[in-house]
Image (tube, rainbow, N blue to C red; front, side, top):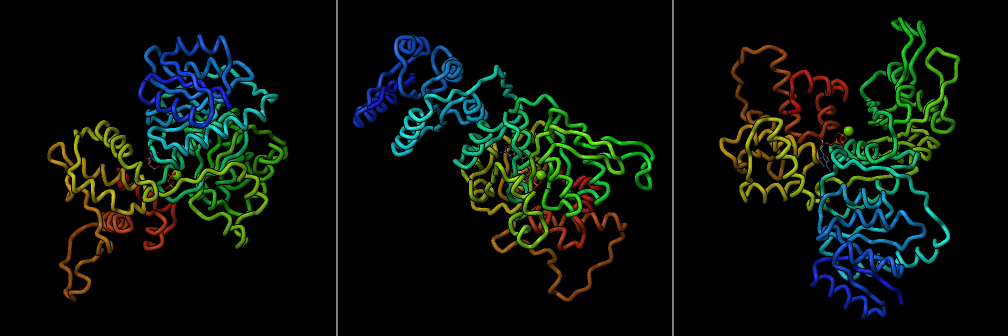
Amino acid sequence: MAKILIIEDDQVFSELLVMHLEDRNHEPQAATTMEQARQILADNVPDAILLDQQLPDGFGIDILKEITEHTPHPPVIMITGVSDNRLAIQAMGLGAHDFIRKPMDEIELETTLNNALKSHRLSRQIFAIKGDKQYQIDIGQIVGDSPAVLEICKTIGRIASRNAPVLITGESGTGKEVIARALHHHSRRTGLFLPINCSALAENLLESELFGHERGSFTGAIARKEGKFEQTIDGTLFLDELGDMPTSIQPKLLRVLQEGSFERVGGTQTLHSNARIIAATNRDLKAMVNAGHFREDLFYRLNVVHLHLPPLRERIEDMHLLTEHLLAKINVKQHTTVKHLAENAWRRMKEYQWPGNIRELENILTRAAVLAPGDTITLDLLALPGEDGQKINDTEETGQARPLRIISLDELEQEHITAILAHVRWHKGKACEILGISRPALDRKIIKYGLDL
Ligand SMILES: Nc1ncnc2c1ncn2[C@@H]1O[C@H](COP(=O)(O)OP(=O)(O)OP(=O)(O)O)[C@@H](O)[C@H]1O
Ligand SMILES: [Mg+2]
């Protein structure tokens, strides 16, 4: 039997919770306002607290702050209908035990509560040291209300202020960089967030970008240059496309991770870095380790905390919030005024597999918004490929010669790249394979022709 305080202004929901807890031989007590909760807490400390966010006289998160300032404190489980993930990150960062979204089922509540009571009993003697961090909640926003996204947000809340490296995996366009930025944003780090794309630079340039170089260390090194590790004092270094990091640079990275020290290219002076490292990849690093393309020791060193972003097709529940968020963003950026999606367009969007994930969703919505004559996106504007994919070349089978078109090579290239990207639905890796060019080359052409709207 445990004493459980319910802080919830919805009387019906609160009574349901009381009944549920009494059935399980607990001793529930209900407060409907923050004030009432404070009075109860002043008299006796419960074994666990169930806390709502929206209360008549304030926000649950504020009372959470008051509760977790004292050590030891009872475990707090936030139960809220608020779908903003920043709240989950914030709550976990402030020391909430867990975060449940309404509607929830009895099993979820029971499991979470039992875990909370158990870990509270075990950890009564262990006090967490809390700083006086102020959370900003305007950037670092992760949109989505699927269980997978909520789990990721909870982990971000738990680990943001730690120094351990983080490995983010997921298909292209799933939001790996969004997660990395949110992690930095919610950390205590005062320095910069510096991204570096390991696939976009040639081997020696990447090494010098990361570690810097001394004057004259190679042809073209006309002056000493500071590397990203030097620039990221108290900040976060985001190693994007880590799977493409050449094996020759991997030992140097391992050393920074192990000892925090490195030398500039061509230099002898040992420098130190306290940058937090977040790495991202859409490749299977474990398979690369097995194939000898990625160092095993480096893999384990980077894989201390692993966040995996499932593809959009596996978290289709996120589509609604994402579409709303992206359309609002597109309307501002493109000066469009889209307010609605036709019902059949929405149905098709939910069935579609989204191989290019959220980036593809954003591209498709941008194109549709720009082309929409009114404030509604219709099915035809989405131009999503059919079940069996789009035919790239409709005249291929007809045997007829195509009429000569008087256009420049650049125009032809732009058209072809646009068509291939549409065909592979913005899966850049597949586009590179078809076009026979490298990922950096494709990225340059996308920028050159302004294809990424
Ligand atoms: N949860 C999210 N909430 C809001 N926007 C998102 C979210 N996830 C992704 N996006 C948007 O989708 C696009 C792709 O995200 P991002 O660049 O982080 O993906 P990625 O996994 O790093 O892709 P790649 O592997 O191709 O580099 C961005 O424009 C980003 O703003
Ligand atoms: Mg990325």
